[in-house]
Structure formats: structure tokens, C-alpha cells
Length: 195
Image (cartoon, rainbow, N blue to C red):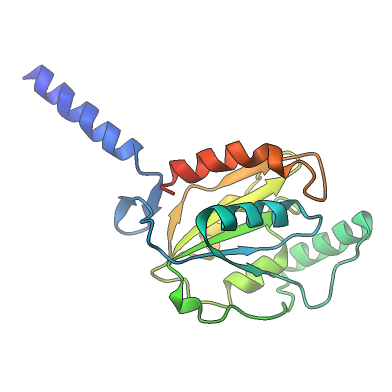
């Protein structure tokens, strides 16, 4: 009897460990490969753009760039100060363009850099502009040191969605210079969540 119970427990653990994605209401699940995917990304230095392009190419996904209507400074220090002020004020700056026919997408990968321990404020403008109910939202970030609360914040901003485990790709470079060295890490993550 103990062997049977042990076998059942091991089998259950194996099934649960295979499921990296979860639904807020329905338990664990895997991404189906026939799903229509959008990679929505915000990038200032180019790191997140390069990662988003790689993910989109690998998955055959469409892309949408989240662009602040009034551009941030191209200089690092003024940009960080402006981003900090926006975060502290809880601003939702206007963004350019919109996703045509968002309803067609089953999965939305939200790719962002970490700014002041979270996603840049235009990302929240984007997330609050659409109904993500019934979609799977997958957070992704690039950072100098780690994700802080960024991945969790994207999940919290889309409470009516299913979610998969996100990943933070750490790099000390700018301009996407070493993103090709991160492809194996991204590939493993995509495989872990069912792609």
C-alpha cells in the first residue's frame, strides 16, 4: 500500500512540475502551440527590444512596441530622473499607437526593462488600455541586477488573465550588445513554460 501511495505521490508531483503556467482560477496548464501570440515590449537602451525580437522570431509571434508619446531623454541620467518622478507620481503617460484587434491574441508576452524596481510607467498605460480577460499574460524583463518586483507587478496589473512564470535576463550591457549570449537562457525558459 505504501508503494502505491508513493507512486501516486511521485506521479502527481511529476504532473505538477511539468506545468509552469497557471491560471488564477483553473489551476495549472501548459501553453498550446497553436495559440496566437503577441510580444508587446518597451525598450530604451535596446536590450529588451533585442530580446523581444528573438522571442517573437522563435515563436512566430507578432510584435507591438510600447512607445511613450513624449520620448524620454536619450541621456541616461535625465531619463532615470524622469522615470523616477513618473513612478513616484503613479503617472500613466500617453503612448503611441494601439494593438489592432487585440482580441485575436491568446497569449501576450510583456517584455520590459526594470526601471526603479518595476516596469516603466508607459507599460502600465498599455496594460490598462486593454481587456486581458481570458488571455495568458507572460512577464519578461531585462535588468542590470535582477527583476525586483517587475514580474509580479505585471501579473498584478492583469488580474483577470492566466499567467506563466516570467524570467529576468540580467545584463550589464546596453544596446542589446550581448543578447545573443542570452538565447540559451531564453530558450530554456520558453521550453519550461510550454513553448
